[in-house]
Amino acid sequence: MRLQDTFVLALPALSVAFPGMAGVSSRAEMETYLRERQAESSAEKRQLLGGVVSGLTGTIGALTNTVAGLLGSIASSVDPDNKRPEPGYEFIAPGPNDARGPCPGLNLLANYGYLPRDGHVNFGQVLDATARGFNMGADLAAVLATFAVLTDGDIATESFSLSSVGGVGGLNRHSTVETDVSPNREDFYNGCGDNHHLSSRLFKQNVGFAAADSSKQFTLDVMTSQYAAQADFSKLYNPYLYFFPFPLIVSLGAFAFYPNFFSNGTYLAGGVANYESISSIIGAQYDSTTGDFTYVPEKWPENWYRRATPYGAVDALVDAFTTVYPRNIIVPAFPQLGTPNLSPQTILCDIYMGLNSITPLAIAGTEEDGAKAITWALTTLAPIIGPGTALGCPNSVLSPDSGFALFPNASQTGGPGSVPPSSTLHTGNNVYNKVYFATPPTKPTC
Ligand code: HEM
Image 1 (cartoon, rainbow, N blue to C red):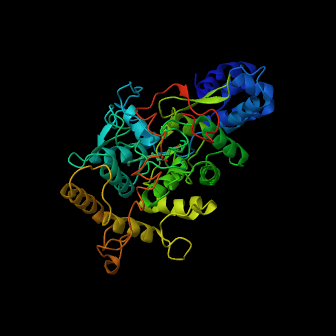
Image 2: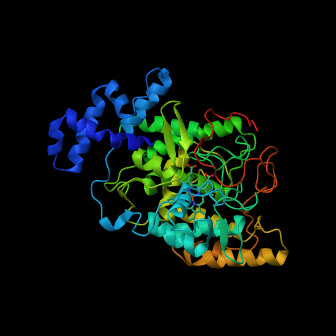
Image 3: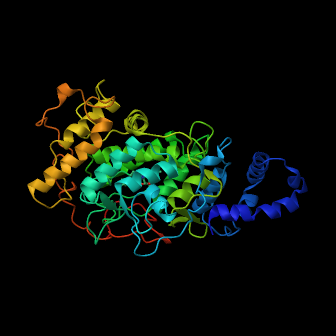
C-alpha cells in the first residue's frame, strides 16, 4: 500500500477521535488540521503510517517520521482544465513487453496512454504528450526528442524506445541523452548498466534534503543539494564519469524538472512540490518494514494539476546553469564556463554548432546515412535554436569546422562510443515492484 493511501485511510479514524473535524469547511482547513495532528506525537504519526514501526531501528524510524513530515497539501489555486489525467486516459501498469526506462515523465505518460503503451514513441507523439500531460514547452520537448531520435532511435520513423530494443539503443543508451549524475538513478558504471531503475538509497537521500528544508518540499534548492551530493559521489567513486555537453544539460535539467513539472499546480505560483506528488510520479513507494523505497509504476497522485504555463528550453537552462550546476562544477566541454559569456544562448549555440561535427552514434550506417541524420536534426532544430532565432547562434560564429564536438572523445572509456566493462548487464525494460540499490554502489557489484 502506498504511504499516501495509508494516510488517506487513516482519515475516518481521526474524525471519530476529533468529531469537530466533520465540520471543517474546506480541504485546506482539513489538511491543516491533519498536519497539526501529525505533529502532535511521534506515536500518532506512526499510527498514521500504518502502525508497523515498532521494533524498527532508529534510522528507519527517523525516515518514517521524515516522510510523515513531508506530507502536504495540494496546490492552493488551480484551473480545473489542468487536472490530469483527463477523462479517457486511464492508468494501466506496464506489462513485461512495454518499454519503460530512465525517464519518469515519459514512463508516466505511457502508463496513461498519452504515449503508446508499448513505449515505442515518435517525435510528434512526444511533443504532443509532454505538452498535454506536463505543459513542457515545445522547444524543450523538441530539443530532447531530437537528440533521442538522433542518438538512441531511428531517423526514418523519427522514433525511439523508452528503454532499449533488444538491449540496444533507446533511452537506456548511456551518455547520449541518458547520463551520469542523475537525481534518482545510479551511474551507468557503478550500477552495472542499471541507469534506469529508481535507486532507493538516492531517493532516501533526496527525502532527507527535503526534510531538512524549511519548506519540507522538493524545491529547486533541495534538488540542487541532491545534485551536489551525487556529483561528489560520482567524482569519488565513478572512474568512468563522462559528462559532456548534451547529456550534461539533461542531467542538470532533470533536477529542475522535479519541482517544475512534478509539483501539484504551478511551481512558484501556488503549486506544491510535495512528497505525495513527487513520490507517486517517480514511482517511489515507501516500505515501512525495511525503510527502503520500492520502485512501482509511475502514477499521478489523486487530484493532481499540471503546471498552468509552459516550462521551456530557456527556463530549463537558466535553472540548470544558474542554480543547479554552480553548486558542484564538473568540468565539461563548454568553453564559456566560468566566464561571463555563459548564457542559454551560448549553450544552445554550442549544441547547434556541435551538431555540425558529430556522427550520430546510434547509426551504424554509411556516411550518407549520417549526413541525412544530421540534416534532419539541424532542420528540426533550426526554427528553435538555429541562426536568426532569438536563441540561435549569430550567423558570424557558424562555420562547418567550428571545432566543437557534441560528444568529444566519445570513444574514451565511459563515453558513448566505449561503455565501461561490466556495464552491459541490466539493460532492458524496467522491472517494477522491486527495491534497487538499498545501499550506495561505491563500486559495481555485477
Ligand atoms: C521530451 C522528451 C524527453 C526525453 C527524450 C527524455 C529523456 C530522458 C532521459 C534519457 C533521462 C535519463 C537522464 C539521466 O540519466 O539522468 C531522463 C530523465 C528524466 N526525465 Fe526525461 N525526457 C523527456 C521528457 C521529460 C518530461 C516531459 C519530464 C517531466 C515531466 C521528464 C522528466 C525527467 C526527470 C525528472 C528525469 C530524471 C530522473 C531521475 O534520475 O530521477 N522528462 N529523461
